[in-house]
Image (tube, rainbow, N blue to C red; front, top):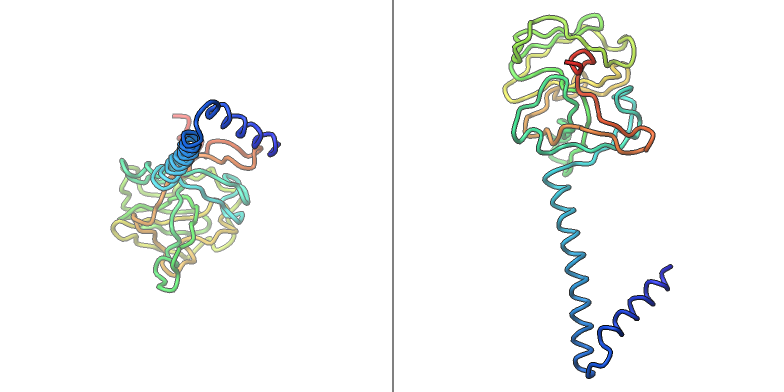
Length: 223
């Protein structure tokens, strides 16, 4: 295959330079090489721009987001989602791990993927496997948070937590509460607005897991 491509390129170069004086042949070949370099440079530039400013790639290495996202699923996040709007409760977000961000010895914080549970100014309490939210900032009534996306009954580290969320910060939990390193356990339990990099939108690998990521309860998604 590689030899066929090289042969085609040589044939193409001959067709461009056939009948030209030696000096002109060299100039034509140089122009052809430069044109290919420009094509690759532009392609690389577009890919870099898209990956830096429009989408982000992330992987969940554990089962913390099951069954919504499976172990080692690769996903795409939309970097623009929160450029024109605010993060909402129930969003699955990609963000920099707060304890890495606050550690001066960590140069590149790990990316985490969790579900956004608490908004700035709210109080989140965890009692007997349920999340209670008061002083809600999204117009909904205070009380128990309805969650139909949990993997199973929540039995591990499921009570005795209380968090008052500061301004411009958010509270995160995994969907698999029995096996998730999330806001309950971090030294800094909150994620700053600037640390949120994208909203997770779809899983693209493996192929049999490919699909849009559900960011809401089923009943809310049906509305």
